[in-house]
Length: 152
Image 1: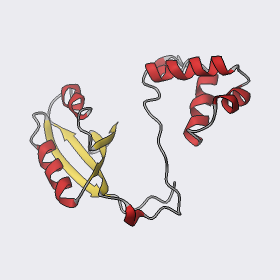
Image 2 (image 1 turned 180 degrees about the vertical axis):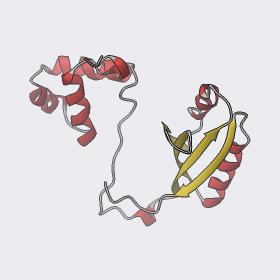
Image 3 (image 1 turned 90 degrees about the horizontal axis):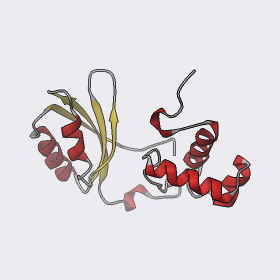
């Protein structure tokens, strides 16, 4: 049997709550309570625990097709990182303090991690890549600029 407490999800209700919030982060407590067959207080307590346990670390607006990306300032990129030392946690801890880094993923494959970054310009991206490349413990950094996302 799988221990659901690993990763902060304790039961099927937590899994359903997270699933509902992933589909619509603005869902009201009342609507969540109805979907989960719980009281509003119970839902609020679960959400607080999931936030405290860092299962839920934020809520975001996902822009629809009517949003004009040309109005955005800056660009988004995915950086592939290869670490030169283990453990890599001291390097990863530094990423939390860099506002350009919006997501971090530890991965399998030819690279050790992917970073999603949002920067003001191609020049700012170049500087960020240089800063990352200069960190002790980072062997290589490769970047790919995001052109568009068709899933959201």
